[in-house]
Length: 351
Image 1 (cartoon, rainbow, N blue to C red):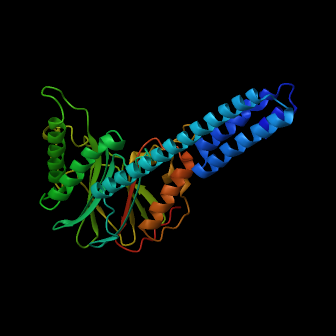
Image 2 (cartoon, rainbow, N blue to C red):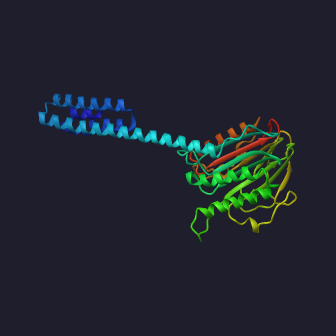
Image 3 (tube, rainbow, N blue to C red):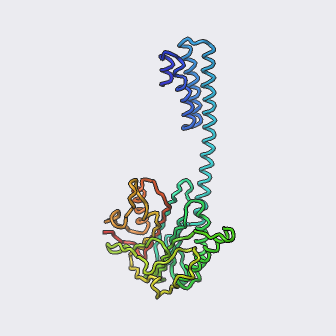
């Protein structure tokens, strides 16, 4: 419109030419191929009509048409390339999502005596994949769970996540207690890190994790924290942070042999009661360290979710995920995983 007005009424008719030429270029970059083609044809027709209206010589008319026509062709080429790029990106996202589901499948909603819900949001939304992990597995020792965070995020963390989940699923069936399970996972992660580096070079990769075990009856909870944010218990209007009695180093550092071994009676393994209806909530630091635009950390467990009723683990996971998104306004800097379980319907109320 502005290009046409300038061409028709400006002191010099060519003053509107750049704006006329720009319209198909913007359309090619932002709209569909057919719409961009329509803008190009309209710009050519408008240029010819306005040049005839101003009585410009044939040479000038042809030059204007050539300029706008060339830019229109370039705009269509840009449109085709951007469409191809969009399709390639969509395909890459689908592949990444398939990899994510293969490496980190959603747990069943019912495992042993527990009702389970989990949620995952990757920091690199375009990739739909990240470095946080969780798993729930029914074993001869009870239901065993893990939530963890691999150092780094995005595609580079997939290999470590795969190793950690694979080691957990394999060893959870045979390790006699959580300390033995953690030590075997530590060995697996350390070996994998060593294979990926040249000889003589040490790795700084590690995985923080909370290992949990609920007895077959569902009333006894054991926790072993390897450098991870503490889990929480929601029950009868109270929200209790379950800090480790004996904090330990993360997995994969190859230092398991120098840390005190743990048994079910050792302070490193916390043994607690899991009341009927209580909700066990485990998160990664993508939740606890999420920041708003002012740089303030998210603190849902003291104020943000006060007074809300959670009928089941799924409602707790959904509410927490939505509230973190609101807090960060979509600007998450880290992957976020949430795992919630209960041995009953889940009637915890935060007050």
